Image 1 (cartoon, protein in one colour):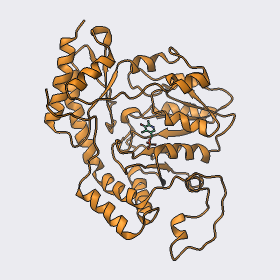
Image 2: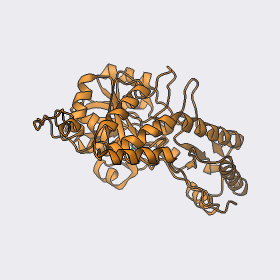
Image 3: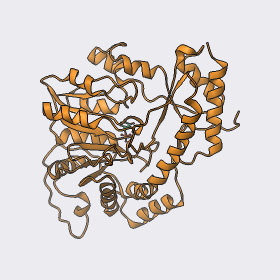
Length: 388
Ligand SMILES: *Cc1c(COP(=O)(O)O)cnc(C)c1O
């Protein structure tokens, strides 16, 4: 057993990130300034989206996307139960109703066939989540959206760097808006932060207004020589702007993203090779022609073949100094969602089946081969000593 605790993940911060943040602080631009604009241009170039709006979180990006599409009271928005709760919370904050559609048992992404069953006259939008960084079946989802005249907002919190089977970066799709997260645990980070991408200039303009109080001009120009004191408010917007120190951190992280994903992929391949042959485990899927960002390694433990359940498996891994997590507790099972919308266990059986078995293993670019070996050894040991 290892003698130090291996966390689920840690951000990879080098002297380059520290120097970039320091430079930003010395520049005097502590809030939104030229570095935010530079970061937006870099994300736009990377994803292929014509417009990128840097904001304070992915949660803010999702809500701004809904607001920009004027989604509100009386509207329904379809998403997956297997996501972080903010995907559904933002729908409620807009006054609309979140409606869940179950996942596909192999990809863990929202199932297009299930989406179709949840469409009503009130449905306005679909928020697919590229779970773990594996792209959703966007061809099928967009076909449904076109047929029913629905908006598609991609929750791309896990998917910066994911390239779909058409060779396109997530975020670059002309028919959608996409919300990225740069939270501290994500594939790349700005500490807190997110970006909303779109190729629609009108939506981009509205989203930009919404990101800063609904004000019609760029706030950073307001304080520069080029600016004047006058502005107008077109919407009751949010306070969700990114700051220059965050964007400076993001620029360095983005320049390292390809190496992060390569390292993550190498670790995932080791996990796959080690666990594929054990019938008690189900390793995560990749799809042909897809470059998976590998944000999470969700391993399924087939508890029907073991003496211990998933919670005990996690406790025992913790005792062996291996940190793990569960992505995610299905949103419909949280007390608020049960009480408010009458959800109950059994509503989304595939999501619940997956939830009862899933464990996210340690995965981050600074992990050593030895760390990965320790994880493999611990998981194998627990399977071999707990067969029923
Ligand atoms: C992390 C996460 C979010 C929220 O991201 P923030 O930047 O923390 O707001 C949204 N959706 C999913 C699927 C996530 O994993």
